[in-house]
Image: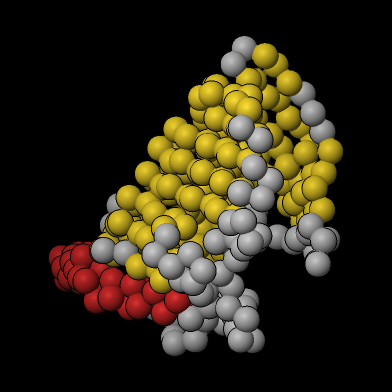
Length: 255
């Protein structure tokens, strides 16, 4: 009797392991299609990546989705410009979410962006290349389809942000970014604990104020999504060896 029970358990385990190994090959195409279709249908830009890999074994009981060579290419009036590019993006989701039916959202728990470059441009006509949301009534991603952000943590490494504003004559480069954040970002009101290190170059009206200066910032940020309000609660910054402490809040106006 015991041998029979052990045999049944062994068969069940083998089937379970087989599913974990085989499922990624069956689900990778589905995830890739969901991502591409959902994003491209909602932005006036072209989103693409070269490869999507899914792992269930290493990250069990979660699933890890790895995207490689991601690009977000602008359309008019910035035709062909690359707004966002990244060597690798990792998404962590619940395994159960992968088996949801069509039209049901997949929740992202963790996000890692590696080797990214974001190039923001505001041209002389005051057009901004990040204003890519479609205006045909499909501006917001529906929570009933695609992916939803239920982030508990995220990380951005080996990345660079360029902000080039021709109107304000402002040029900012934040390079060698190592940034991480943790908190329940799915809640309407939450606190985000962040740590950031980077090199900063800042130029205004042809005058250079910072040139690859090392900046370190540990910040606890209060987030109120209902009010679109972001409050600096506890913050400690270092610019080179100069310590800075600050507080305050940012509120986003509807217009």
